[in-house]
Amino acid sequence: MSGRSILQADMHTVGQWIADGMRWWLDQLAAMVPGRLREWQESRRIFADYEPDTGALLARPDPSGAAPRRSGPVTIILPPAYCLSRTIERPTMSSRDMESMIQLDAARIMPLGTEGMILAARIAARAEGHARMQIEVAAMPRASAEALGVAIARLEQPCHAILIAAPEPQSGHAIDFLPAFRKAGLVRDADRGALPLWIAVGVLFALNLGLLVWRDTAATAMFEARIAEQQPAVNAVRRINARIAKADQFAAATVKARSEGEPLAMLSRVAAALPPGAWVQRYTWVANGQADGQANDLRITGYRPQQADVAGGLRRAGLSVQRYSDASTAAQNPLGQPFEVTLRMTKP
Image (tube, rainbow, N blue to C red; front, side, top):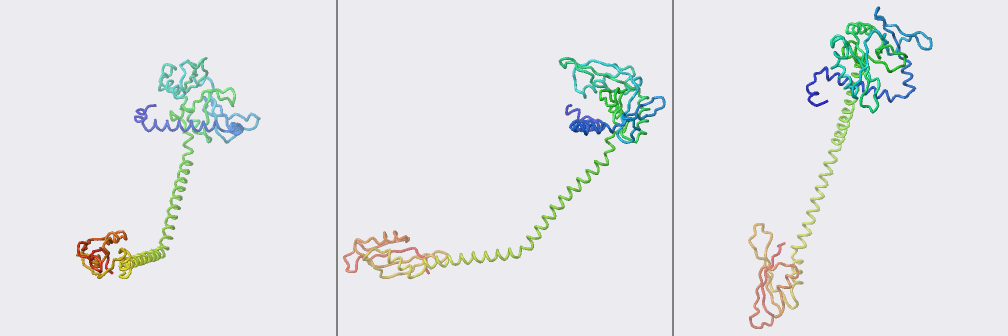
């Protein structure tokens, strides 16, 4: 089956394809049924002989001699003279292809005309090597089929099969006309009787799905309500954490300011960085002109021994030397060589 044939098919053909697929699926499930259950199901079947003259369906008695059963699916047995039958030989093909071939060659296979008969077929045997197979074909006049359809419509039980003179009640090797009757619209499809059940299943499935969605929505709403109830406490905790973080930042800034801007600590740091023998005469804060007004330059004036490296000592101590000048070429002074250095510091 190609994609073009599927797109060009009408709704009736699509419905037939779906029905055939459902029957195939049900047949596969039926083949998986245990043997005992299958025997029990076969024992419930009612076999009825059709009389063309009166149009009556006469139920056969139970094999054990009991009265005919009144419940269960009905298998209708047709007299052999009610249908025309013949056996033809064709190349091996599938059952679906066989049905299509029979419908196309109906006028050539049977002398009743395409519109005036109902055809059914079955694979009778396969030749050696499975290259060809024998097909048994049976045809029923349309008028006779319509009369039989009226008799079937009067049945209270569903029709299970329409067989041609099955030699044994349990025989499954006779041609079954029921699929052809369904396609021709002469027998109500038994699957339609289950339509209310399928509708009920669909409704229950929709209700179950709706219940799951409702439960999920209710659980989500309950979770959101719990979050809303705990939101004030969460907000309070967030405010406390913000205050703690702010206090920590303030304490760290205070410690840093004290360590860097404390006058005595700063002077002690500068004094420790000076080389031995150097001493400070004067500390002077000099504004460096920055906009924030926080950073200033510290000018240190003092004296040092002749070979002492004041700037190097200050740099090794991690201080930022901005400018350094001394009077190393001046005459010897008992106090030492004068120097002047400008450091970048932070004013307390």
